[in-house]
Amino acid sequence: MDAILYVCHGSRVKSAVHSAIQFVKKVQKQIDCKVQEISFIELAEPSISVGLENCLRKGAKSVTVLPVLLLSANHAKVDIPLEIAKFQEVYPDITINIAEPIGIHQNMIELIKKRINEKVKYLIKPTKIMLVGRGSSDPLTIKDFNSIVKLLEVNINHPVLAAFMAVSKPSIHEAWNQLMNEQNTQVIIVPYLFFSGTLMNEIKHKQKTLPLAMQNNWILCEPLGYDPLITSIFTERIHESQAKQLITVAK
Image (cartoon, helix red, strand yellow):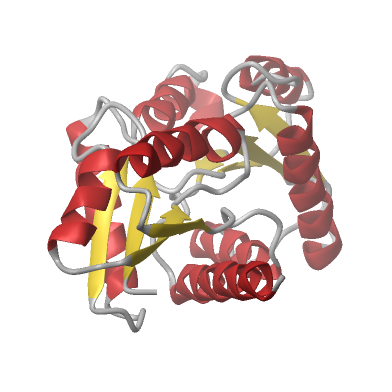
């Protein structure tokens, strides 16, 4: 591997794009590779193809593409491989491996616990926890998210409610209304998002529209953000990708 290309989702919100770039820069400092470039799937520049060209311009002959994605949805399964295939039609001699996204990993459970503990030191039984994901039309992605919810429940010994910003059920609106109707004494909202962007802003807006008597009891955690726990997962995914390539070459 001569280079790593980090592929982020992208956002219309400039601050979210800036957060993604700063996040990757922190990861880069912990990864042993001379050529490390960043790109975006959509809504921001540079594109994947430009990112790959930047790697080649710096002398890379083989590139590991690392999706900066929490789950393996259509972006990881379709969009990124499609862009790579188009690029390799132009540069067939370049070896490109695509690593897996983060997926289900114990480190992510630990990171969620960190974000909860930043806001609440002790969980009491009446407290409700809502883990909010992006949502996806891919049933396997939803299955993975629900597996994370179950792992979190086991680790903290506390019920966790899943909710999704779009496409999937239960929607955040459904889960939100359910919790409001239950008149819970405390609700902890955990965004399963890397950065603060459009989706995070929507959650903040919903929190502000709560009745004043409830606002202080509905606690919004920070997005996952950068943490060495994530760098550790990325290192694993890079090594896994390289191992697969070695097996393929051996065959």
